[in-house]
Image (cartoon, rainbow, N blue to C red; front, side, top):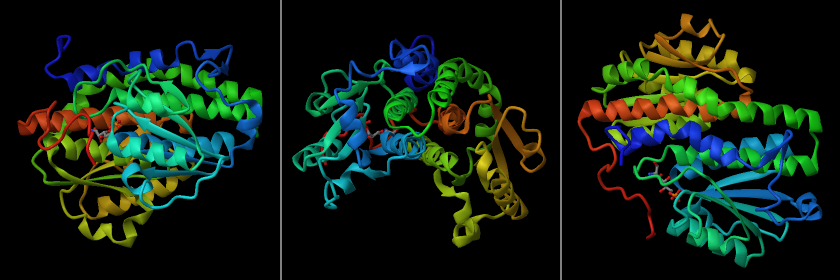
Length: 365
Ligand code: M6R
């Protein structure tokens, strides 16, 4: 049942290229995204959307954080992203021109379901991105985009996250095709890159050995930092959650520009830092943040884009992800972080698939 792997988590990490492919399948034709089978919003309704709220928990929330940047960039609609347990109690401003996107692998998470009901009650239009056909969230939302990741057994979510990202890109492109401001050519260029991701994810998986080695060498540490800017920061949050969840190493993800505002005090000799540096607009800023932690003795694993021969000069070790556009990197950068958490957990001798105190589906508040 584990397909030759020692753990479900490892099997599911390796199923990501297929999950990406399956989630794209049938939804793209000639460089154009077609979600008309799943989303019943008319062109007029799409044009009328005034804001979008992503609402979710845990890893799905981290997918929503990527979604905020992606949808703002593609469709130029203001987006907020909330943890469901906060959203449902904070009296959010919702109108009938608000599109609420709930993201849930299981479709049964109590807080996410309650947030969905609250949003509907206040007149929002709700789209669910979920991995389970016929789940509560799928049944109660106005429209559903299924992620075709297949059953996810390990408590630590992996292939569900990357498939959620794909669903979010598809939604962003679909809305952008109606709303502008990007031209059809610009959008189809993005679609081309999207279609290349599953093969590129296979290439990232080939670096497993190097990541395993780094994870093993770091596994004795009790504290670790993940740094990034922009979308790299959103992925850093997910990498940090994954590590904490299964290896019980305390870690924090930081927006690298915030380091100076406190966290830098915690960087001392030998502390491991995983630094993501794939976002071109903030690359130089990121490199100087890495230099700051290096100067304080941090041991740094850098994540760079293929062809980047600079980062190697600043960090101790570097993993390269294949070239894509900045907007799509999260699908690739998260994979080394998942593998990193996995090997740190195995090295420390914990139960990969069933971490202590956690359940796969959180159906109580
Ligand atoms: O089924 P859901 O996507 O609604 O679950 C949400 C979270 O409970 C889930 O992502 C959790 O954070 C994972 N165990 C993280 O790996």
